[in-house]
Image (cartoon, rainbow, N blue to C red; front, side, top):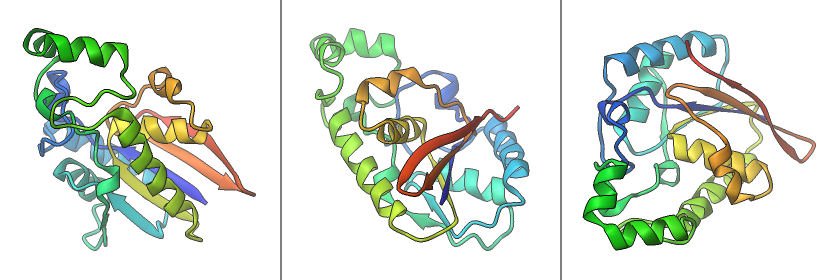
Length: 196
């Protein structure tokens, strides 16, 4: 199996460096262009399944990238971005100022701390891992997952045997395409491509 991971295109919230997962925002013009260019790299591949999160930025990315009108997208809430709760729509400095004690707890224990009304990284990891395990049990050749940067970096952690500290060792830029291969019971990162 080849599992293609496509991060959604740029949004204004990305550009402003806001924390957002649950906020449902659209691509900006740059994000639309990135999605179309990603589509050029994917156009020769016949996908058995295409998964998107519940957020419209992933649906828009898939539609602009694959531009064939009959996509049969499968929405799966397990590949939504992490829910930042009351931190949503705020940048690092705003969080530090408005939630000083929560900010300290977040820094001290980022894996277990959940922002007010949000989820912890440990909870986030569990649902991503469950999604990945389900996908690997399907006997399909090519699967596309259009999702979010945090989800993709978490899938890398799953591939690297659950080492959560490696989450911070990877970048995931808008419309990056990663290929994860699953062969003979072995899961590995085959490539990561940046859309120019």
